Length: 539
Image (cartoon, rainbow, N blue to C red; front, side, top):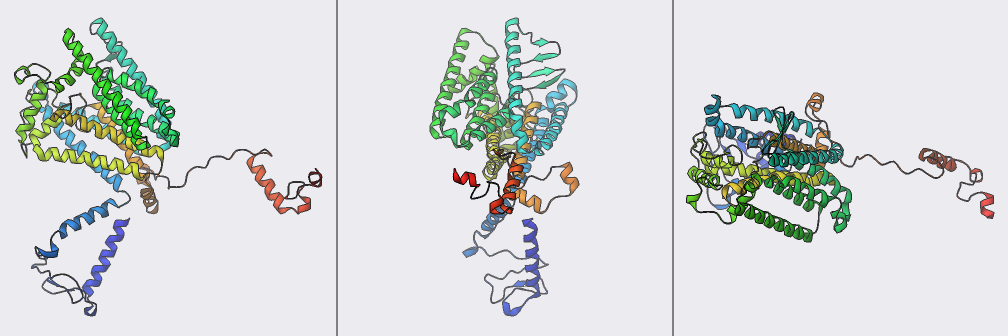
């Protein structure tokens, strides 16, 4: 669109320059490939042999010209109407490709030792990636009104699955581990039906984005009152925290980041964030206290296992006690990161996957990246997440619909916050919570739901006012719209609400009567004109 216009202008300018009017001081192309500036041009002469141009002289006013030109080109790319859409596809696609590569590198040794197939985990993850791409395709085709209508049923399904999972886990602890009833089986974080697993906490994140954005967008300017915030947002969010945090502390922190993103995009006052921060710190302190009591009593379960990580982060034990304790993973992750250096040991050449680092393909896959790809590889991954964060906030700022703005901010806070929690735990900035790294770690439910959320962001990116106008100005082919995505609605063209019915009849009848009144003479308006009837004037 705009890029095509710039290219045409550039071609015309170059043709005029080569035609060469000496009186205008244009540059004239010489026969030997040199280019000399005329008396009216500003700059120095560029020379070069064999059809190439020489380098710009160093020093003077030419210093930094390439940097300025690069910034101008970057601004030009970001100013394009579909820049948000393309940035989103590029960052998510590259992260997914890196994830598949690192999953194969982290699991090939174990899979070959267990079953003789080094690509077993890669094949399984690739299948989930294909399912996630289909979910992305379906979600980018949906309009905003469909997402708003899906918020409440999705939240109800997520809460029901979380309650079922917690009941199964509690029943298993009471009966000594029996967590299977018929074809339904439950583990600590997931439900399995016929070998197909589902992690309810991942669905809960997406459902909370949709429902929370719908509630906050409907309240609008009344969010300054505590009563409007307290009902129904805070009770539902508190219930989700309890249901998710009962077994999965990391997912509860992701939900917290999601809610903070929603409230920030809604324009909630800072004192609300201060109160919520105080409540969150008090809750974390209570969890640490419960974990300390559980560890002191000698009772150890899966919940205590996750909560004890907080106490080890605050007061880690000595290094010689970390061989068979919870801090073993942390120590091995530090060794893997330190051995990577700047450029790493090489893709597939790390030693941590040789049973030195447990869960290397899941919670600690960033340590494998640091070991095999070094600081450069880690910088690439972090930069891609930074681009994803910028793109999500850009979409939230540029869309004109309150629901789209809130949902984009909430989804961005969820994905980027989860990446920050995972990377921070691996490198030691945060306690380990067990959350996967989005797009990269092994996990079917997490990958499918993440790609579905990216599809929702892609739908919102296409609905930006500039993007919608550009797509309508030069629409793609009909088969592209049918196969890939339909055209978004133009900004400002919203469905008008039906006006209330008139006391004198329905709205069409009232309009017809007004037209008849205006067309009839004043004396024959039957009491409905400006002067009214004679009886009405006498009264």
